[in-house]
Image (cartoon, rainbow, N blue to C red; front, side, top):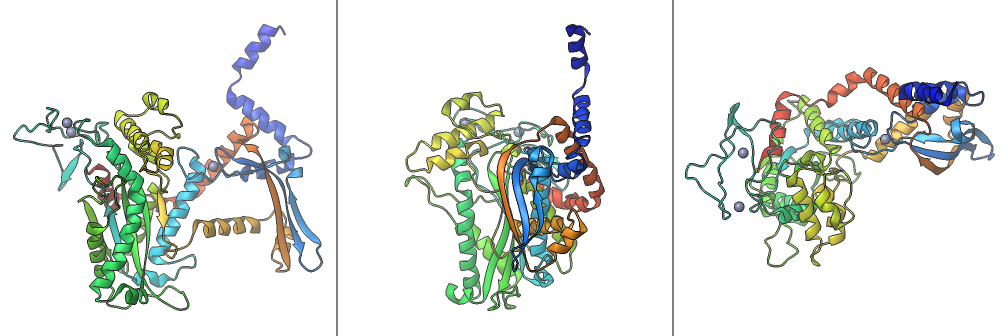
Length: 490
Ligand SMILES: [Zn+2]
Ligand SMILES: [Zn+2]
Ligand SMILES: [Zn+2]
């Protein structure tokens, strides 16, 4: 064969054909071929797995004898693949799905029990609350009243802004209209203040929690100290970007009684869900975070909010819906607001950002705000690509329910019980054993294209089998409509 003919053979082969050749070579390896499929499965369909080298040994604590051993030495390429664990759907779909499932569990168990949380929590006072940011300038929006769509910003008297631009927009914007959330006048919209608000939003939420406790005590006619001996407030929240690029929070609040055995018990009867809802509403109006500049107004919540006492005893299905909605947003970052997914390192990157103009102005606003010596410049610039918001999307107070760590540990345990051999499984059930693990980082990504292709397609097939379980994660009808309208408020 001439070299020209050989080159054409290579270029004719599809990437899939090359990947299949990888897989065939892996399976045909006399030393590791038999372990290859299991090796691939351990990556659980992750897009960017970590390669680890090392071993894990179970030893008898009494005799010191190693009862079983798992080492990467006998695995393909002498490594094992560990899922990256990234929570962001645009970075790793498979791992973000696991995170989303865990987030769902954490919210749902705090509402109705399970996984170690008593089922009686469903009888505790529970409130669903949504908080939004104030206005930073008029934006295009879509509004609906009784199923009828209203014009964006009807203005009968032809008002104009200080820059001479019309403040009216009579369009009925479609849901996917890219102008939704964009400023009516980009000179009127205070991008820097909006970015600073995002920067302070987590702190504002924390302050609000303190005020909720204060308001609860007041409503019950007690001092805060006395109230703290009777009730505890716990919550779970998710931050979501509105189209105008500022975050808003959906949260679930629960009241627990105080029990010396630290078990979850209901609070005294006078602390009911309505009392909690009223305390949250009162706290919303009072909580604020002082601005960095003494001459600027403090950061506070906007006028649009909702506080709703839940009755999950009579509407059990509501728990799953709320959990689904919160979990869905737990894995989404600022891409929702049209930002960029990478950190900004230098000011000169700002001009060339490939995202919508509104997001670019917010990112620039965050970056510029970082130049003020009164602002935590390192932090706001680190999160400029997230429009200034540096908090986690999904957070909960300690007592609300389980932790991600506990759910992960349960999964590892489960995997360990599906051990390679029956002998190993028997050994693991022995209480006299101690596990010693030592793993070191050996790189990132799949060693070969074929490994990646097989890992992702195998995982996709398994996912299909688990579809029934995932359906719990679908947010349906009314709840979705009810909650998604918040992304459009201005
Ligand atoms: Zn991953
Ligand atoms: Zn409009
Ligand atoms: Zn203007």
